[in-house]
Length: 153
Length: 176
Image 1 (cartoon, rainbow over the protein chains, first blue to last red):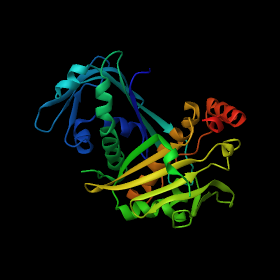
Image 2 (image 1 turned 90 degrees about the vertical axis):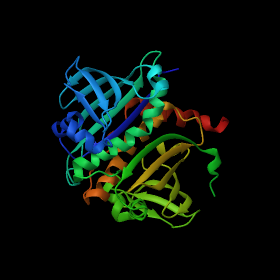
Image 3 (image 1 turned 90 degrees about the horizontal axis):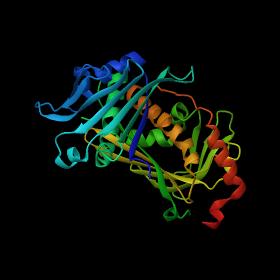
Image 4 (image 1 turned 45 degrees about the vertical axis):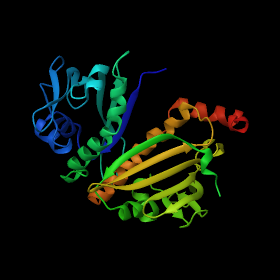
């Protein structure tokens, strides 16, 4: 049995640099993540946390890898639901690549791949919990970068 | 009519779009829209359950062929889907592609499900896993910004081609 894993791929009309900024800037994150924001230095070894608008800590973890405009890996644990916290750590990898595109069809696209997986023997219930959330968050991120507004309020 | 109860969902993709259910329905069922996000293919569909469904390349060749299984505007469209235009792949059993359109707050939640009537190998599912995010990202961009976002169709990976050839040779669905 392989480890539980959720993969979500989306294509966005933007640049890798702008996408990286949107994934790491607290003020931008808040706009597409329903008021939640991330606090971290976004360097390997930096602590990382998600906070609700009212200041409560939602999730905590650590940056495992950070390559600006390319790749971000976060060790990630839920803090606000007892059963999810008890389930332990997960790992989320965000990869940014240029996509091939049809030149007469509206412009370049950047491919964003989110892979959120359980760590060995840990975190499995968390993957189920995030599977419904990622499409909302990433749909909003795409809308914000392309149109300046979010889709799902 | 196709018996949809034989099909099990294998690939699901969800996206939220700032649009109305009617606009999303139009984007799925009108040729002017599909050719801007479905690798240049234009939809040709008879608007009723049991009607003919096709996707045509710009030169008129058939890309995808099937039958309408559910025509419930603007909530649910379900079609059988056989990529006739791709070598070997066109000899596999058709899959069933279903779009569910639901109001979700101010947005529309669009859920695409690709279902199969046989125990389709993991490597064959990679074809759809590569294609759907491009198609549905393009549909969202087109509806929200008025401009397409056409990530190009990539050649399928070697393991996909190998798995399709093997399935066509062995036809495992005949004894499942």
